[in-house]
Image (cartoon, rainbow, N blue to C red; front, side):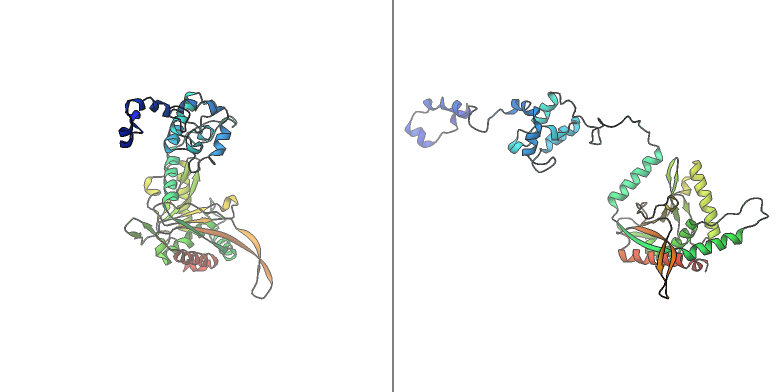
Length: 356
């Protein structure tokens, strides 16, 4: 028995016979001195009062609360590790504790994959996820976790924009026409202003590709369209070169196809920038997730009235909207993003420059 020689020394060998020393070794292995060699069988017993053990070892998830192996076994077994009593040093939960807890039944502690108990929730139904939703979810998760977003917001006066829109729509009105003529929307003018700003600040009309950045010569504007089939982003190609009437017609056609589920891949591929407009839902301000591999997306809120000071020292009512740019910091620095927003704001507040 190797343990019999645990206290062997040369001096002891010279002073006394080795044979009588052997019976003393089993006494050293007796359960009384700490640490006991076989503590595992006692693990199931403390399970009746896990709270006290947990509190002695710190908050769940803290350092030393559970070993990596114990966490893995608990995760695979669907067990809330916070309910397992630890027998390791300082109350640490070890693998044997979790295994014993599972073997003992562990009633009422199983968790769904999401990590939260559904025991107290009302009845529910599972809704199947459509393929377009899966693709959108994967792309947005990739964007939010790998693209370094930053956000810039600007308040834009829409007084002049609304006046020009009314003038343009009046000029296109034809009482004798069998069908009402198309009307230019605020969103059409936002698309035009953003497209021209991309032409003025081409660094924003780009995408990240690891060892290089692609800066595009053409502006292809992706427009977020929510449908019953999911979120689509059809592309208005060469939007910087289209007039407001052309943009309006293109958006109506593409949005109609998206809602009918008839968009072709070529009609939602190849965008260089995205616009998401929630103004029609009376959302004042929001930020959007970048549509990769693009470098930016503009989130447009609703227009509202406010009192503003005038040049002569008085006050007047003015309509404003808030636009928020989400940009990829790998492609454009904050100063470049600010320059782009300034250009966008300039076109929106002086819309006659869009027609030049």
